[in-house]
Length: 329
Image 1 (cartoon, rainbow, N blue to C red):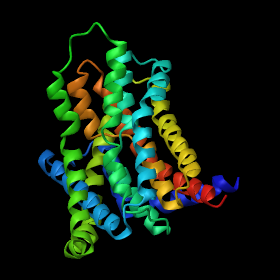
Image 2: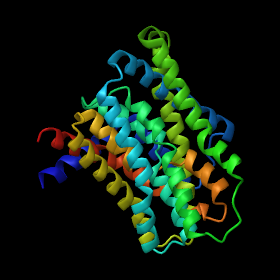
Image 3: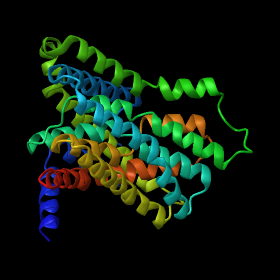
């Protein structure tokens, strides 16, 4: 009962974070049929700014820390988790009743990562004294793509007779050079190159301004999540349950492997958040191109309408508590 009460107490504390409350405001507004929404171009600009801040600040902190064996361990675990987690996710989604192509496309979302979930987790972990190392932003960038390639391979095996696929060159361009990957990796390298002196010049931008932009972006995401839930059709209860089961499976796997590898509490919690998150920026773009016959309504409803709110309200504090407990063993 202690772990349950601690998790609920931590979740309540996380719910009082401004970013989470703004997400709730957007969700409530959508459910009430309000016309609240950010213009699409502004929402895209905000997402790019958030990724730039995360990548740049991570590079600066990584330069100050030094890219040592701890980073290499976390990076190796992140790559392995991203590449392999779509496999059990696909099998579970098939058991839940999804057709092969939709299950493969949805599995891609649960191997790839959510930048905004990571941003919210960074704020929460810092507030409870578990701030992860800056190099975890690089791990975030590394985990964006492998899951997409694995899901495409699964779909190719499951649907070998289909000719409805994008050309290989166009697909490779979308997977490897999408905006999220370019801005995350590029800004991390710039932060790594400029170090603390460069970080000082952008401290206001990556600090207080970042928090305000995160709140605004989460307000818009709350609206989108609420509308996705309202419009969801054909999503059965077993499929909805996957929106809770898959993040818990990913986070538990990351916690176990990270603990065995000796990751510290903050890094362990951050890795669990990454493995338990679901992409709703890079993965939908790649899957709409690679697997156009997959049902986008299913994977968007699960990743944005179910898993993202779950992680924001309960998952992040739960993973942080588990990491704390494992670190004390």
